Image (tube, rainbow, N blue to C red; front, top):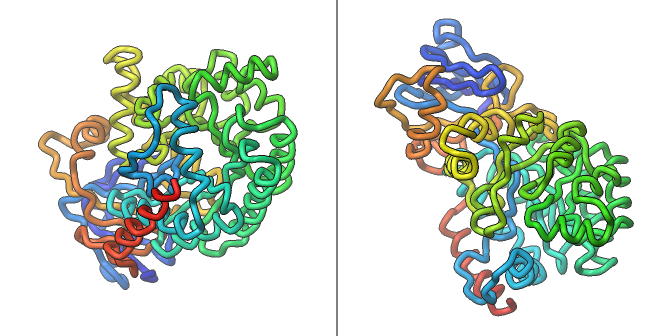
Length: 442
C-alpha cells in the first residue's frame, strides 16, 4: 500500500447523507484513510503516488450488502432438475451444490468474484457462506481470498438445521471462531456477522443458541427473511407467527442485523423491522430470477426501514443491480414511484449498513473514511451537478467503464489493468478444473 496517495481533479461525488459533487478538488489518502477532500490549491502537489482524475467521475467504492461467493462454480451447470417453485430451486440446485463444496472450492469460488468486483469498482462485500460438508475453516479460506485480492468483506456462515444437529453446531462454532478473528484483525478490512439460513430451516432451539452467541460477541445476524411465500406459510403453520414476528420474539432483529430479501412481509412486519432498526437488503435480480416477487422497498423506506442493496451473487456490478431495482419498483408501483428510493439503497444506505460492522467507515469520500475510491470513465453529455446526479447515475454511469479501483489506499486496478499479485487467468483456469470435479460429484 502506498503511504500517501493523491487523486487530483475529476468530478468528485462524495455520496453519504449530505452528498456533494465537487469540481477542482482532490482527495488525499494517507495510510489507507482519507485525510482530506479539498480544493486542489489546498492540497500538497506531491505524494508517494499521484493519480490524475481529469475527465473521470470519482466515487467511493461500491458496497454489495448481500453476496454468496460460494455459488461461483455453478455457472453453466445444467445438471439440476427443472424447478417450478422456490423450494425446488433450493432442493434441486443450491442444497445439492453446497454439500459438495470443499475448502479449495470455497477459496476459488471467492477469488473469482472478488477479482470481478475489482473490475466493477465494488470494494466492500457482505457475504453469506454455506458448505455443510466443509464447515470448519471455511470462513478463514474466504478471508484469505479477500486479503489476497485486497478488498473489504464481512463474512458469516449459514447456520441451518437442514443437515442435522451436528452440522448446525459446526456452523455456530465457525461463526463464533471467525467473529473473534475478525474482531482482532488489524487490517480493518475484515468484519463478521452471525449467519443464519432462513426461519423455515431453523428451530427455535438453534435460533436461541445462535442469538445468544451473537449477542455475547456484540454482532448482529445475517439471515434470509420471507424470500418466498413458503417461509411465511411454514412459520404460520408451525409457530403461529409470521416470520418477522417470530424472529423478533427470539431476539434476532436489531440494528446490527441484516434481513435479506423481505419480499413477502406485511405492514406489521415492516413496523417491527423499522422499530428494531434492522436493515433489509433488497436483491431484485435474484428475486425476479427465482420468480418469488418484488420487495416493496418503497413502502419499507416510507415506514423508516433502512433498506440496502445486494446481488445475492447474480453479479458484483452494483450499478447494474441498482438499475434493476429502479425498474422493479416502477413495474410494481408505476413509473413515477421508487426512483430515488432504489438509488438511495446503493448510494447512501449500503454505507450505513456496512458501517454497523466495520471499524473503519466506508462508502463516503470524507476525511476519516476508508480510502476506497473508484474512477469511472464518464464524459457527461448533459450538465452534471448535484441536481442531475441521480439521473446520470441511473442512465449514464452504469454504461461507463471503471478505470481505477482503490481499496484502503491500495491501487488494485489502474487504467483498467489489474495491479494485483494474482494471475486472473490462472484463477479462472483453476475454477474450470474444480468445476468439472464438482459437477461430477453433483
